[in-house]
Length: 239
Image 1 (cartoon, helix red, strand yellow):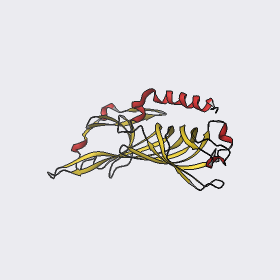
Image 2: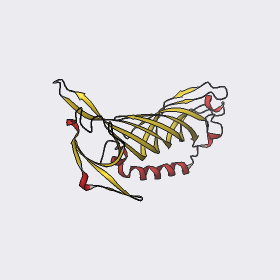
Image 3: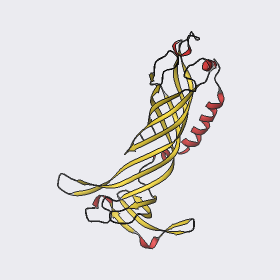
Image 4: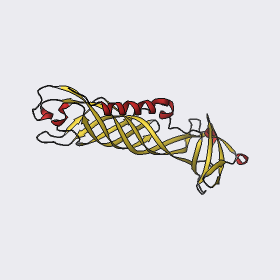
């Protein structure tokens, strides 16, 4: 059994670059950066937010051509948990758009019927690097404590769309090779495709449309080689 080394080397290189800062990959929380701020009753504004623990400093942004600079003389500071109804920041939303690199795993793959084999639902070990475009919405959400004291906290929802590539395993046996292979073994596949994720707080789940390449000589008889499948994926860098 001979395995093509090119996809494996490509993935190892991508993983090495991507994992250079795992902490940076995993962070999708509200952090100091530029945002579009939507406050109730106000026009959306482009601002810089400096986030420190439970406090947030808001700076209007001065734009000069393609350059943007926080206006240091117009800072407004807020205690997130102390924001109440009637405050400027009450139920406001910070919107952040970014390029996203993440680690994910496709926990289920549905493979449509091929030849005389009915549709299959596979759950095999795999991992992938995801690259896409992301939009996060951070909203100051009001909450009432048991003492009837109103506080606020940051709730988050995010959306992703992009590409993924990785390595996984798949059963190889007579059924999925048209009885042209007598062995039963776990073959290594190179997986790639497109994915769309939605993130609630720290949980990220998505749908994928992908293709697998079996990385050995039996790829010519494997009925799923380069055939599309639908997958359910989770973002593993968020845990």
